[in-house]
Image (cartoon, rainbow, N blue to C red; front, top):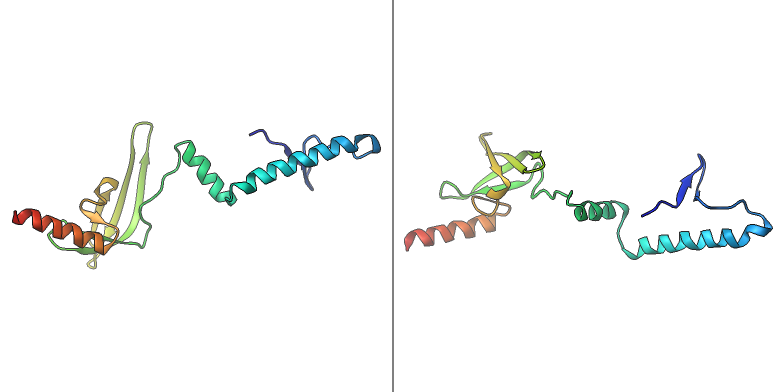
Length: 144
């Protein structure tokens, strides 16, 4: 979108605002109408500025949504029981060919385990309920 506003050091204004004189009133009104139309188009999205920035980043393929945050609980089922862990850090490697997220979580003994994004929903879960359901499913498969 072409920028139509400029900041003169004091105020934001339409870049084509003519000096306000009797013979430029029509041009001035046209600029105000264009500003109002642009503002209305933005307001119609219903998005706040940061939401709009996220939508633009997503459209360009530059939005990374993290599955959890530092301090969140994760539930590991790799040892045949549900073990609660706390996320202590997330690290991401971004390159042209690979996006790699590693989640570091510690247990009650401060032992740290690293998980990759693709582990979520397989060996580590975001909710205890999901972890317990996966564990039951594994046990049922083992019993067959």
